[in-house]
Image 1 (cartoon, rainbow, N blue to C red):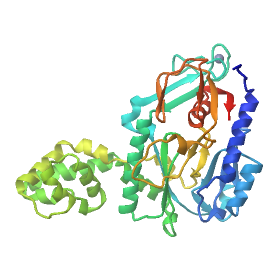
Image 2: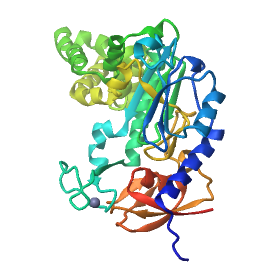
Image 3: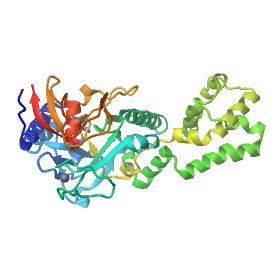
Image 4: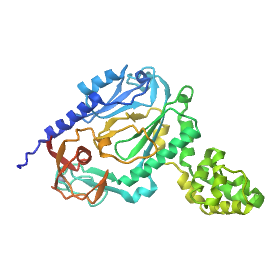
Length: 404
Ligand SMILES: [Zn+2]
């Protein structure tokens, strides 16, 4: 079959129409009080941001994004305003804000070795040899950045999301929340706060972050309790020191991590199923706790992005909208028990379509969703939407043909 190359502007149009078609039927997850929210979007054509939009209801919003400005990315404000469409922040009149959390796989300490990152020329495929290089020596244009995180790291980020939800429910008692995949490499948690909790200021939100992340001050305090005080109290103090699930708060979180370290015969005490324990077993638990304390505190730490949570005017990616960095659906997670990147769940296209793409640069071996890729510049592959869109929106491949 002769290769029929799709012109760049046609490729752009093909994806724009796919996005538009998706938004006509998308089940966008929006707050009940949509009329109080600022809507913002990145325009598919211009790449520029359009902010300070306001809509009374979902159908008005859908009308706007399918007729006038198809969005590459779509957001609503975590803040509620008296006049959300006002272009000055003072003029909007802040009423309160939801509590927003962002967990990114590439921020996880265990994932630093699983990130593939380089700069490249989107025109000729030149790959920068040092990180300070900003322009292509051949084309003299700005280099683009490719950043990829392996799927196993996204699974690790999901485990952190589960811990976050556990704390939000059990320690804070907030039950009105929605979790979603970001459509790239992380997760979002939107906690809808009712009055007066929505009035929490940035400082208070910063304290919530420090409780989740466990900053150095908190870690030092905890270590003091488990190490110094224990030495002072001696064997008799052992029982009052052991953290248990029934304790609640940070002690409950430490108990959960400790359960993974202690022998079977000590678990029922930590779980709170029994209230008595031999002193010898108690001493054993405390010794395990003390010698693994740094590791346990790292296990307990939930790496949320502080600046997202403390920002009272943060723009939240709309769950079930499309992430313009990948072309993937940032879908709502209904079942928090497990997460697996799923080609069909991130796809917006028709599953019978195949996208023929040509790589602009060579890539080292990487895994996208469930498949390994190792490609050379000019390689041509026929792929399903999710894989093709990933490479195209990350800028390392271009569309050649769509087979329907
Ligand atoms: Zn170049």
